[in-house]
Image (tube, rainbow, N blue to C red):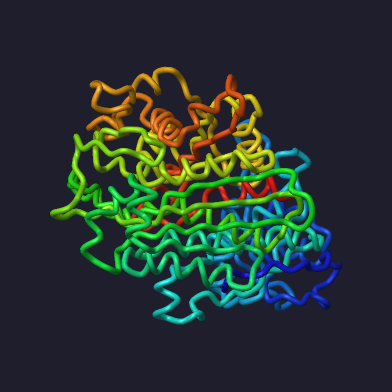
Length: 511
């Protein structure tokens, strides 16, 4: 793992004599008052001849030290949030890297007293890591030298903060690798291999199911999606199971199913008009779940047990591909009529969710999640934010709101959505031949409640509709659709993966 390690850096003294880093990145909304007199004087002097200072990222040299000034812009308005620091850090670290820095330090001289910015230093570091990451294929071709910055000092950070952000950064790095890699380099077997290597020697146990007959028998909906890929051995599906058991008493169990579509052609409902480009990132949900597991493995939180199932599969086109109108009997015994083969993610996850539900019945204080780049509607409705859709027990426990509130403090924002009766009505069968409809035959982005009704489908095929608030054993369940937040700028072909949900989940459950 080549992510730039965070280290605690000493407070900035009155001079640079003891400064041990080759660049100082200062992120603030005001550079007029700094503890270092020579630095203040230098900035004031430069400001007289450079009107960019305080308005955009600016590079200067003070006492033979590279100094990068990164303004956040306003922080006091109702709609400002900690992403001001995240975005400023991305720009600043690229400037420092371009200047030849390999060992920079980040300094926030005047931290805003608003609670929104209580984790601004940590967020700035994570923003720098986002900017510095390069795709796995690029590192393999060019060498690790394309990521020259190997550590970043955090001025005035304590050791606990450093431990936490390093765990998060490690998890995000893995998630970006898994999500942002082309479909052959990260075909299902190689995705599984990456996970095996990622958790080698850690507290996370890994089990990979690679036998086609076993997948056909135990996960019929996933098998249906994978069917056309069976003709190509290197595209054969994998189910990756991960489990972390903490030392001591378990007080909470987190249970995840991640969508790992290594490539989504759309199947028989083929993506046309250029819409297939970028679909190697349709594995972002499974990537984020694996990334969260990596963060957990490195941090080793007490009291929290985490179980994750990853549905790693390719939705190929071919003579044996599944088609609309087919009826598939799921693991839960639910007869599913296929509405659109491009609505494959919910099928890939459904049987794993059913199995997870059965496991959850015997766990301590369980909460279930599905994490997926699932619908264009989520991106259209929420923009660059995740969409969390929850069942009754999760809503009663305020699960999504708590995660989203943590995300607001850690630059991993999301919107809380609702599951309503219309969503269950949408998936009702139209004949006695089937029990549930997987989708309509239109794109989710032009379908009313296009990101909400898939959660209802998952609840039904996963058997969680029998574990609502009125049941003997309510099971909280949240569907996390990260289609809008999974890549930078909504650019699915070229944008860097964001590892959406890793930070907010970690902040909520591990710190």
